Image 1: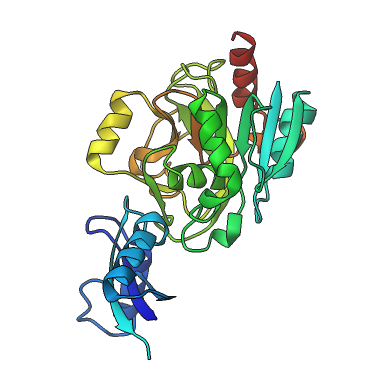
Image 2 (image 1 turned 120 degrees about the horizontal axis):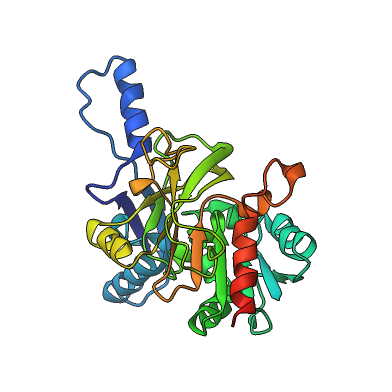
Length: 83
Length: 231
């Protein structure tokens, strides 16, 4: 069993209204050093796979087909072997 | 003409679409549950607005994998008319039947109001009773209508005249002020290259009778009927 920790983020150049609103919020709270905020998604998916290579392949396919929209989003993930 | 109105878990404009096609325009309209796999009996398929699957993950992302969407893709490939309104357009984007993607509105607010759109292409089955530059007053109601496509894709849309509606003011001027959601170029609706799949954010089905506050949405339905009658 493997746990995939998946990060989905908006592509560079794609406007992030949520990030801008949070940035304004942080600045209004006195965090004047804030330059930029980008908001993404974090997901954990547990997969039953016989090897890390197999788990990697299946998680990649999940990301390509559903978890991220390639028009506006990028993704990265790390795999952890579960005891 | 036979209209099929697809009902996903979370659709909430299905009744309005059924009413517009069936009662206002007197056509045969039928609800289609999202688990159906055969839509061959219909001439026009409507994907209505709402929040299919709660808009979880991304608006339209989960509806795209409903059994019915395989049939929608199939019928679209055969040239049947497919109209995606609001969440229906989001689903068409996620399904790849139309290019681009939706972002959250640039101000992050859900906007429910009446807006003007300018008709950019009256040479489609959905707009053939109108004329280019015509201004329509239509209701919108969405939080994710901020249409995005990369520059290459945008040029392609423009070159192929696939942009059908843009948000505008009452005189038909496109501007930032007239844009309710930050949509690229004020785009409010696009059609596929084959010209039989239209996605639009405004709700024509909510503007087909005076009692609803406007009738500009009739243009979409009367165009569909006229085009179909000419086939």
